[in-house]
Length: 270
Image (cartoon, rainbow, N blue to C red; front, top):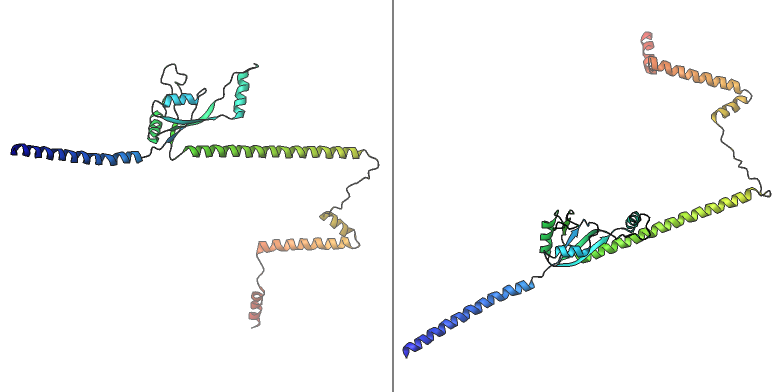
């Protein structure tokens, strides 16, 4: 009986130890699970810089879904002017040209930014089409991961570009309207001028204005006065003398001051 009791107590102790170890393991696993659940998955956006012709968002989704879960995809369409020009070139005189619009750039959102970083680093400058008969086999991926860039930033950027385009178009329309109004006013003014030019009752408005006399005219007027020739001759002689005096002064130097000229005379007197 005593042996059976000792065996029962030993089994109970082992069971208690196992229960304690399992409870400790569960307690250790619970914080790990809560930490994983608290760790939020942040989406990442990859910028696609090159979009080949006839490349659609569905192609991007099918090609990149093999590397991770792809969320939203947006492609920027080409300008209307370029599209219209290509459409006219593709028509070639036909009535109904078959032309589909192309895209210039795109943005691809991955559910996990780590997958987005890995895809951008591994697929950059690699062929788009893996199969031999793929139409995009000779086009290369041009991918770049946008750090701290969210889809809301893209929406704001597109809205800003749309607003800027509208303002530019509004300014161009206003400028064209001002030029047209100015041209119409000029045409009306010219028509009125031509109509009034043949009217005999219109007074002749000749432009009469007095011009300022020139230097030669002023000298001629002074010379025409009585005694003006003598004054002109004296003025010319004075000008000639001044010029000669200045020439001699430059050749022989300036005359000595008055104090230096008086010293020799004083010395002779002494």
